Image 1 (cartoon, rainbow, N blue to C red):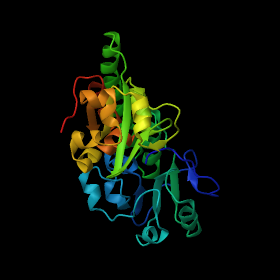
Image 2: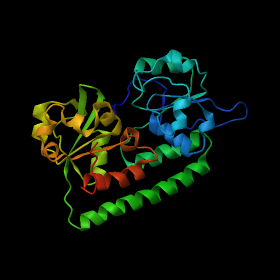
Image 3: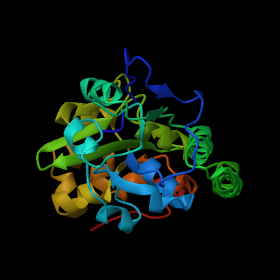
Image 4: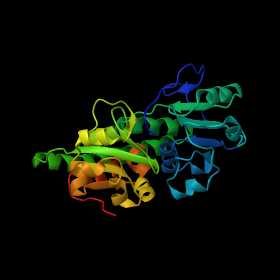
Length: 293
């Protein structure tokens, strides 16, 4: 779901680092946000009144869910986007398909693609970029300062655990899109990046992106903890339902009932809630708390 995938051959589509689309006199910009983390940043910048549409991953804050929906970020349709008469579309480079982005370019709709960088520095860069695009430079500077302070505090907790000699556990991230459709996170994923920030080791090695869950792979991964999303647990009937899936019960984590979960976009979105997510994730994966529902 959240693996980084660059888009190629899109002509003049604007990537991070190109001149900003500046606000000017006239009607207020009509902004469509493609990507839950970008939508969260727009709200954090106090620019939510500019939004006229969002994608289906824009689930936080709750008010975003009341805006017109344009579908899932990777499977957009030009007709739905153009129907909102946007003056600006902001998205990450994970948005697609490329043919739709080319249609938007042909329709001369300003489209700004921001890099999907699974690092804290990427959050800061997207904050500054959106502040520039939306005429919220001062708010972006304030938000950046706050995020840096929160990030330092969250990292401090991890440093204390490391100083105490707490070893990083092996964690297998598993997400369910539907019953019977579970995937594990390998390298170059938002899940792996979060595990690394939290001082854990990704139990699934030698795999790029997301892989369908299989008993053999789960057992070979031998995780100390299974991490999932709260939405996945809700779909599967809680931790017990998750552990009934494809060999998970036979892992060390499954045998001990060690399952933890967080809200999807908080955990994987790399938006303004990233420091909060790290602060919550560190005690979860280091054994201070587990989720058993």
